[in-house]
Image (cartoon, rainbow, N blue to C red):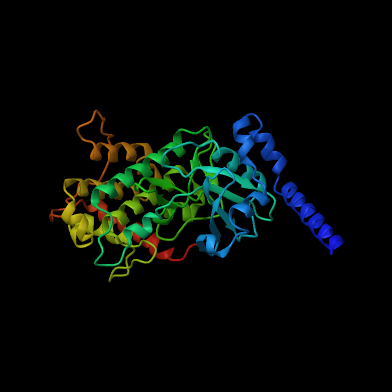
Length: 374
């Protein structure tokens, strides 16, 4: 029995070392060696995570799906963390993964979930994030009637905080990061409903001297930028499109992934068509109509600007952030950003511009033809 235990322990140790080398752990050590405080906590041992999760006990599972499981863990320093254990066996280039982990570990933004580190002693690396206690925006938004959903002011603030985080990722880091999967399920809310952008598993870094990146198409149907879907060219504007869909979801409480109008239109196609007709009130969430004011119209037009077919015609996330911030705090010394938004009436019926219906009928054609994600 003693010899068997020793052999089992030795085999486990050899396997951990093999995975560590395979996952380019030494490369990660080199990347973070310049910053001792990051290097100290960046690479986490499997034994520490097993102890934190009671050996990945089923009772510690807090989320899961087709791509993997998330566990709640308590580290030895009493920090509560969320540990993402992926089921994916076909991994992208491990060098890219390590570079992105090293970059994300240095991001420190109030509205981005903090990545504490990773474990490279398993076949697929484990990621360790800060634990956010209050669930996702999706679950707060899509509650069953007659329970009230998030108040309008909270929705507007969450939109502004999400835009601020994306603008930071696009502009404030050394290499711009495109999230590539912005949706309500990936916006976490803490105890005071502060928004935290999460799940960077599909994210890509784009060097500033490159206009786009040919990548395998990733994203969630309903939020996916049609131009990215068809061209494979990834830019920051793909996040802008997904954020525009998120704004529509906040305004309507319709699920972009499953919504279909009576005419078989997607949420984006239906939203923009009704906006052009001046009849968007029929699609808006009743709670938004009751609690909202003129700001609802401006947010609706901002959403329409974000989902324009041509990426170059969409605003940047920085412009979107400034527009939402000026709506929330109109009395502060905030300079509104000049964004070319559609000049439609949202609730009252007025004449609309002819080019709008052409633009969005093209968009509808793209969206309906991409009903299933690649």
